Image (cartoon, rainbow, N blue to C red; front, top):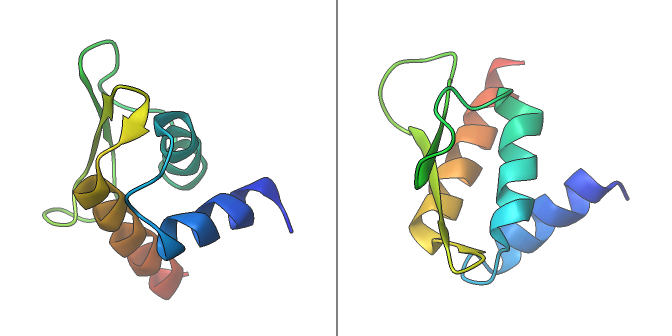
Length: 82
């Protein structure tokens, strides 16, 4: 099992306990470099307009659970398109 698969599996199992660095790694793998970085938020481009938007922020080293769920929804959408 690759690192990416392991992290995504853990995100699906418990979106409340995901490290921000792991979520950023997953987002960069699926969506590329963030278009906004260096502020409190990282914003990633998606091949569609509208929701789910990929906007994550670091909350004392952890990712916010609702943002983890948004990323999982976006990953599912990307998988459907491919």
